[in-house]
Length: 147
Image (tube, helix red, strand yellow):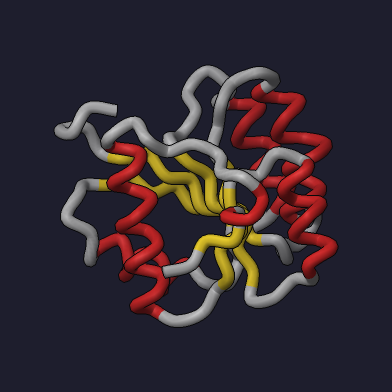
């Protein structure tokens, strides 16, 4: 990604859009945010836009229609096939077993929804790594994103 281009972000979340938008405003980079409200919209978006992927996808685990795991395992990975789309699963809480499954299925990170300042910090960390082409899937021990 070039530093003068906006960071293309896709957010799939029914509830926490406002907080995410406000957190992006705190970042020292320009972003283009597309928001989808449920798993069906995510799948349709990738079917319609499979040639133009975002830089990153934030996928809420508890979406209606299809949850984040269903989207990740059955739909998104088959539509984008071998393309390297970083997917970060977000949720207020999921079990360690589910976190293990998400890692096994190819998610880049799990980011717990906590507070505004932690969200801003995590988004800043992620955006810097993407801009510097250093955003890679970590080992399992570093899969849970935190400050």
